[in-house]
Length: 346
Image 1 (cartoon, rainbow, N blue to C red):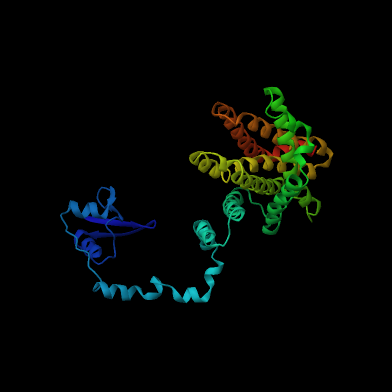
Image 2: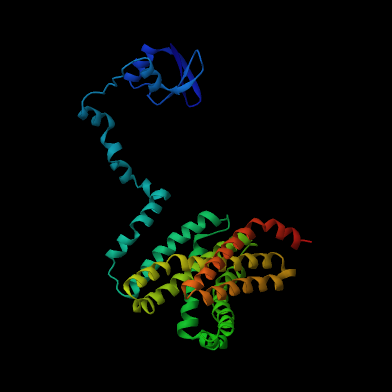
């Protein structure tokens, strides 16, 4: 019997069984390589055909165990030369893996307490979210410097407007929260939703004000996502240090995780939607009033609806679909960007 060997889309042979066995013994052909019967054309592995022909394989070793280690060489086992050359500093995959995997361990070594610990962990999760959004929403216009500016500007605005100036107390709709259902809904939409979404928009408006070129809507979506993440984690730190610590251990643990993961993500999606419409408003100023209205109203309404229902288990059966709809809308908007351009360019 004779067999062809197929490897990397190349056919070798045909080989007699004895020759095939010898090649396997020598390590030149693998038992899992694909083989084809020269008579029937049937495909299977080399190991299958050798067993079928009662050919017992005895793969050789290249010297002793020590000899094999010497042949591999110390540089392949512990690449000291590469470490000294500092080429690894340009390996983005290595640095990202280290950032994600070792971030909490580094935080444990820092001499920080209280707010510093919560904020450091929030920055760690923000970095992960940033990488995630960069992978899915990056454009050639996205810049690291601007991304960081958006992230910290949003938190700066929140601190000044909330903690220093007391912005929520200036919005009368906040007084409607925790009253009867309809008034509660209005309070969350025109109070919490509208106020928070407007603040998250401020960095995007500043970016476009000083942009040196027209920005794609997808670029504003990315920066909107980062602004939303910044708001979400900053708000999460405040909740962790106030509301969450009053809960029982299990509830506190869960809410601390949620305040760094899912809830900032929801904030990000809402602001990403706003960024999308702001991008089009800047590109097509003839329609800017309607587009600005959509940029503010859609996130505010979805934000308010979510906050109205999310405080109870049964309410979450309504709130969770609302968040899914927000994700659906953002991804659909991005797919339909060309359709928007076609309509607005007329």
